[in-house]
Structures are given as C-alpha cells and as structure tokens.
Image (cartoon, rainbow, N blue to C red; front, side):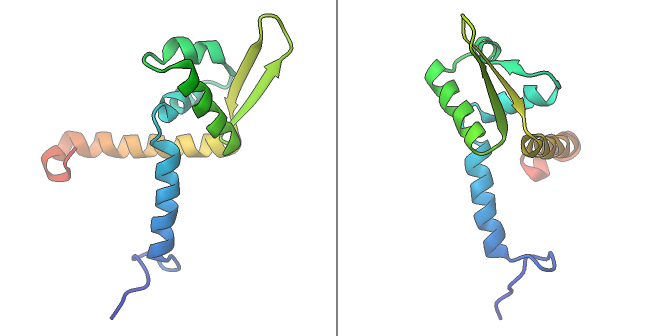
Length: 123
C-alpha cells in the first residue's frame, strides 16, 4: 500500500520534495548564503562595494548575477542612487528575512547535533 503523506498530516511527500528542490536551487548557489547571512546581522542596507570587498574569490560577474537572482526572487531589495560614483544598496525583504531566520535555525540544529553526535549524523 502506497503512503501518500510524509508523516505531516495534510502534506504530500512529492510536493514537499519538489519544494525542497526549489529551495535547494535558491540557497545552495555559490555566494548566496555569503550574501544573505551578513544582511541578517544589520538593519542597515549593505552597499555593493562592501559585498565585493568581503566576498573573496568571487568575480564581480558572479556577485552581480547572484544579487540579481536574489532580487528577482524578492529576497533582496535593491536601491540605486543617481550619484557619481554610482551607489547601490541592498537589504533583505520580509521574505528574505524569514529565509535567513530559517537558515540560522538550521545552523543552530547543525551545531547542536554536530557537537554531541557528529559520528552518528555524519556532520
């Protein structure tokens, strides 16, 4: 007999796996978490140049692509100022803030279990 749920009443396992794939595609791209995590530590916008200077090993092109993807997914809000030199700032949207809070929860889970039980959970 086929089981239609994953142990959470009202959830479909296949649907959850599809959503997991979308989430994984969003947050596991190189540079995504490195952009998001610092933004959760401040209420101030972060300038492009600060990302550029702090993300070692990232090309300007990769950084620009990743920032654009996060903006298109409504995770980041971009604000450009008509100044010379140009100034561009980013901040988390409410959606982005919730995402980062969830990532921090996962990091706390990992810390908890990797210290006490690292061999059993493979961390």
